[in-house]
Length: 94
Image 1 (cartoon, rainbow, N blue to C red):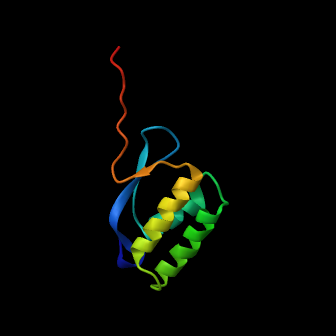
Image 2: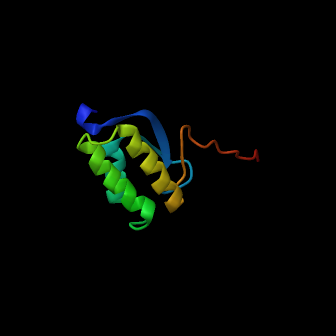
């Protein structure tokens, strides 16, 4: 990871595709790639705000953690589970 990635102060876990499969996102560049390539929706106020914020952060006009906050809002809007730690599954014993 390089300085140009605009690293966040805290990473987050993003649940992808199926329950229990996570991606750790720790920079603006990672979040931008995730939203533009693999996000389940490509619409919504928070989605477009996140893309705008990512651009501003990449141009050093906003701090990297602004991108993290915008990413979290886009995830909430899209129904994507994001957390500081992965969600633990409570699997019953058979």
